[in-house]
Amino acid sequence: MKTESILKLFTYYKSLGERTFDALTDEELHLEPSTDANSVAIIVKHLWGNMLSRWTNFLTEDGEKEWRNRDAEFQETIKTREELLTKWEEGWKCLFNAIGSLTEDDLERTVYIRNEGHSVIDAIHRQLAHYSYHVGQIVFLGKLIKGEEWKSLSIPKGGSKDYNTTKFSSEKTDRHFTDKV
Image (cartoon, helix red, strand yellow):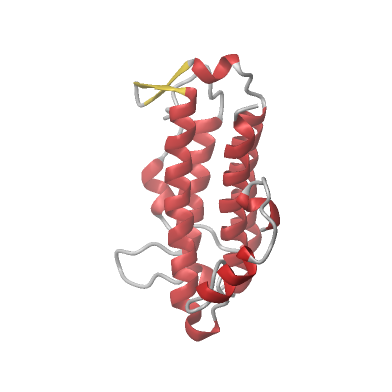
């Protein structure tokens, strides 16, 4: 089905966030680099709220639920790593369940986000872009916080030549780039 590739991309970005969480201490998850910047914990809380709102009853209700309090998502209330991981998993589970239940016919349907119509495919792409943006923030915060201790989650700085040499010395394959991540 057409959603297989998109599910792999969502899984990939989920894994980047999790690998960053693993690199950070509990204290570092709550570090705000400046007064107007969000901590990793706040970004996770925002993603959680967005995911629950967008993916709950995805095909039948507006993606911006009346019960969502978006402004509260940017208040530091997550106290523990366990709470952070629980919210993270709850949000992703809602997303994966919604996308996993779609049929081919559903992909051409119209869904609404704040009363703006989107094809299901466009709504999925909108959320993929939104989540990759925020996961990128999480990874960047991890890199800033850890400094020289940071271990790259992709091709390390200065490692492109070696990476490409390895890739081009292998046979061509037909697979998704996330299959070996």
